[in-house]
Length: 391
Ligand SMILES: Cc1cc2nc3c(=O)[nH]c(=O)nc-3n(C[C@H](O)[C@H](O)[C@H](O)COP(=O)(O)OP(=O)(O)OC[C@H]3O[C@@H](n4cnc5c(N)ncnc54)[C@H](O)[C@@H]3O)c2cc1C
Image (cartoon, rainbow, N blue to C red; front, side, top):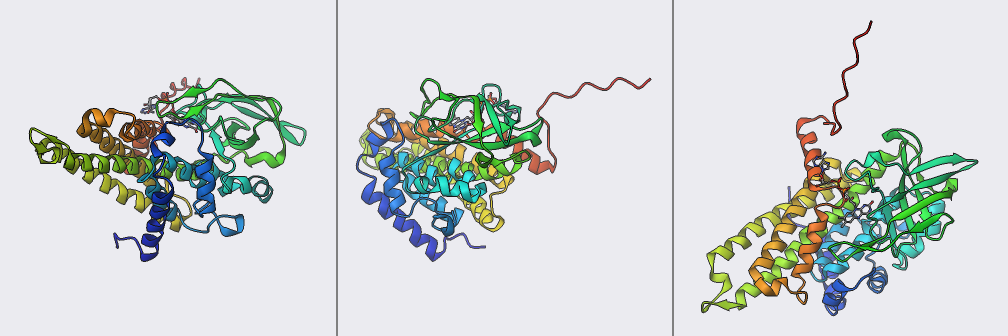
């Protein structure tokens, strides 16, 4: 067992750090407070080989590993928190699940602009009545000649205001086995977007409405029975969520540490007050532990093909809670300065809070971890009433 990065990984992380410091420091506060997907950053990252890191070279990617993508997102997050969302879009988000299962025609049609940072892809899973209970989703894809008709709606779709292609989870038939996914393009007949909503983290989303949208067979990403595959691919998205949460906690921690060394109260630097030292000690332990769990998950995923559900649940739980803890405590250490919008600590707090809900909430992650511990699944649904006795 070796807890150190390989020489190659260390050099890659350093090169991403240099890129981020040279290009992303300037304007990072404004970037965090500007609405909309930062396509300028996306194009720059794509030009510098930071999009499609774990996508095979034959498909236009960089042919690297998930661990490489984790190193890249961490290094960018530690320099410009908002730009980490761009690395997410180009390596972990909806595009990554799409890339895992796309057929050659779908790759041909969509990959170019997505890998060049000119377009962005969203995932529509959540519905008003299907959040944590995702398999309750109702959006239906019913056969119509050689293709299908899509009817229903989605909420909370990140980047929906800018995306030009959407991976939409839908129902081809009853039960979990009836769930699959289709690709829907902006502007298709019957596909409309509702009013703009804003999350606490500044990101926006619009409800998606599908009214009898014509789906050609080549727009099906995963047909009936595809739900388990879809969720396996989605575990990569969760690793991006986890990496950003932990790294934004570390970003805020670093700012607070520098502040504590220079800010004086009662004639001494804040760093000399034990009550504050212990906040840093606790955050350091949580951040380091979470990083080891994250790296374990990514490294094993590179051997297995995709991250395992159990490893992902553990890593996400640890990264979400440590990132939130570190960012929140950093704000406390920095007092009014940390709470002000001209310092990115408050942004990190808002972002970390959202990741405790997005991508499967902390409670649902704990449910999944408990299943691994006990080696069995626990239905979250009400018990079925007993069958009446025969005769
Ligand atoms: C920042 C952000 C970005 C998002 N981006 C997207 C996106 O791009 N695409 C998309 O489709 N969705 C997206 N979502 C939606 C997200 O996936 C859902 O919010 C999440 O799955 C929870 O669903 P819900 O909000 O309906 O909460 P609910 O499912 O109603 O849950 C409410 C609370 O009850 C808890 N709870 C529910 N069931 C259980 C249980 N069995 N045991 C214990 N506790 C339980 C939950 O953990 C939560 O705390 C995003 C959400 C956020 C916050």
